[in-house]
Amino acid sequence: MSNITLALAKGRTADSTIHLLKKIGIQFQDFHEDTRKLVFLSEDASIKLIFVKAVDVPTYVEKGAADIGIAGKDNILESQADVYELLDLKIGQCKFVVAGKAGDFSPSKQRLTVASKYPNITEQHFRKKGMDVETVKLNGSVELAPLIGLADVIVDIVETGNTLKENGLEVFEDVENISTRLIVNKASFATKSNDIQLFIKRLTVGLEEEYENHNG
Ligand code: AMP
Image (cartoon, rainbow, N blue to C red; front, side, top):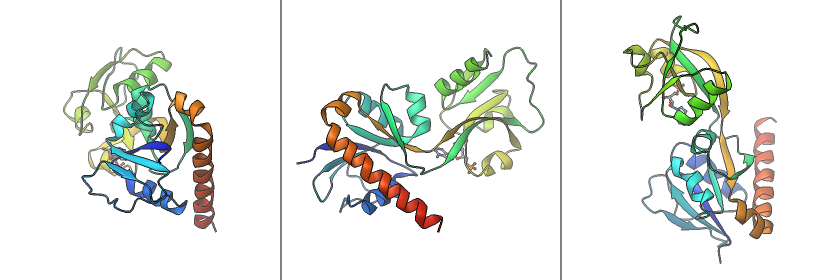
């Protein structure tokens, strides 16, 4: 019987996470990147994996539909879900930044307009700085907004910095480091404490081994 339901984010970090789980002995035989299947049982039957959109992982975990979730810090922060964040898997490392047209940062402006796929993170960041901003929620190609005058700046994820560079934008300010994190439903953490702690321990050991392999 599976004791733990794990919600895993589809997308760019799924393969690395599945690889890490395999390393600690948790295998999903019929899993592959392009699968249409949504539910998998580990070979040892200890984990039921549900494969869901990254933005939905915190919701599944907060509502208790999954005991544990593995998703990007960006989605966890934006969701504002009431969950425990217990482990950094160090996968998919990138960062949130404030960026805009190169050489065009105008902090003296009364009220900045900020375009982002992440309105909550954006508002929280500027609120902390005591700045009142107008946030424009977009669903993609955010880099376009400052170029066509839709916004003064953007809050977006930067990995290599190539997308910004190719669009004549530059980083004005770092907001937050992003990577894949493990989150846990608060009630499950109490009722399935042993299973969850053991899973986290195994993952921690797996991560330490990966780190040692990469650093000699
Ligand atoms: P880059 O050109 O490598 O800096 O990548 C930046 C573009 O890829 C931006 O449009 C980001 O929104 C997107 N991106 C990069 N890394 C991630 C990530 N881990 N999660 C979601 N989007 C990302």
